[in-house]
Length: 153
Length: 153
DNA sequence: ATAACACCTAAACCTGACTTTAGGTCAAGA
DNA sequence: TCTTGACCTAAAGTCAGGTTTAGGTGTTAT
Image 1 (cartoon, rainbow over the protein chains, first blue to last red):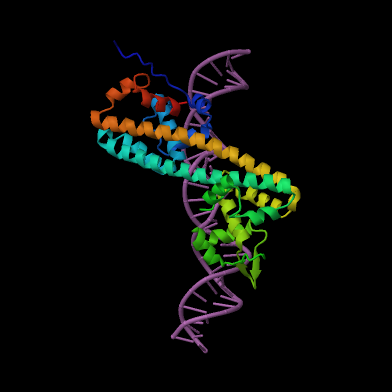
Image 2: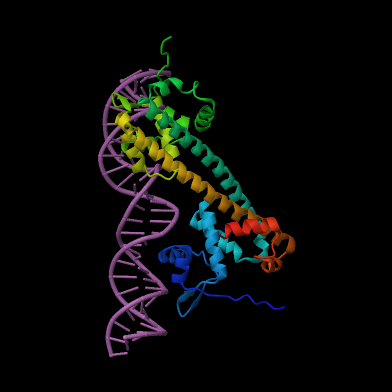
C-alpha cells in the first residue's frame, strides 16, 4: 500500500477563484510571511495543499480576532517543528475561548435587534411610541422583557 | 398617577465611564451626527436617557455590520417621526438576518478551532504529525470528522 | 487669586488591511 | 512575429474608525 496522494499545485489565479479572494490579497499575505513554505517556479508562485490549508487557517484566525502579524507569528511557529506543538495548541485554545465569548456577545446583540423589531412592529400598529414609552422597562410582555433586559445588561 | 420619570443628564465623562468608551469616541460620534437630539448647556454636552439608548443602539448596529455613516442615516430617520417606523423596522430586520448569518459563520470557525485543538493535542501525544496526516480526511474519529468537514466546507 | 479639573474645538495624525499603479517578464496561439 | 493573458515587483494610495495635539473656556477647592 503506497502513498498515492497527488500533490496538485495551483497558480495564484486558481487559488483566487477557489477561495474568492483577490489576487492582490494573496500576494499581500505572502509578502507578510503567511506562506512560509510557498514554492515558486521561475518566479511564479505554486500553491499546494499546505497553502490551501494555510488560507483556511488564516480566515479562521482572522475571524477569531487575530491580526495579520500575529498570524504570521503562528505560521513561523509551524516552521519550527514539533517543539512548538504546545504553543500552537495554546493559541488555538485561546482563540476558541475568544470565539465562544464573541458568540455570547452576538447573542446579546441579536436580542437587542429582536427587541427593536418588536418595538417598531408595535409602533407601526399603534401609530406612535406613547404606549411603548409607558411600557418600558417594567410593563413589557414577558418574553420581550427578557430580550430587553438581556440587551440592556 | 403622574409621570415621575426623572430625566437625569450626564456629562461626557460620566457617560465615558458608564459605557467604558473613550471621551474622544463619544465626541467623534457626536460630530458624525449620531446624537441628533443631544443638548448642550453653554457649550457642554448633556447626555440624557435618549443618548444612552442611542449608544446601545450604535454598539448593536456596529456589531451587526453597519458603518458609522449608515448608523447616522438611521439616526436621521429617527428625527423624521412616525412615517419612518417601517424603514426603521426593515433596517433592524435586515441586521437581525445578518447577525443570524454571522452566528452560523462563527460556528464554522469554532469547529475549525476545535478541530485544531484536537489536532495539536494528538500531535503532542504522538510526538509528530505522521499519524494525523494518514488519518486526514477520511480516517478521523467520527466526531472529529464532523468538525473537519464542517470547517472545510 | 490661582491652580486644578473637566469640559470644548479644529485639524492633524495613526493603524490595519488591503488595493492600485506603473512598469516588467514570459509562454502560447493566430 | 506579435500580441494576448497570466504572472511578477515595489511603492504609493485608500478607507474606516478612531486618537492625539494644541490651544482655549469655565467652575470649584485652597
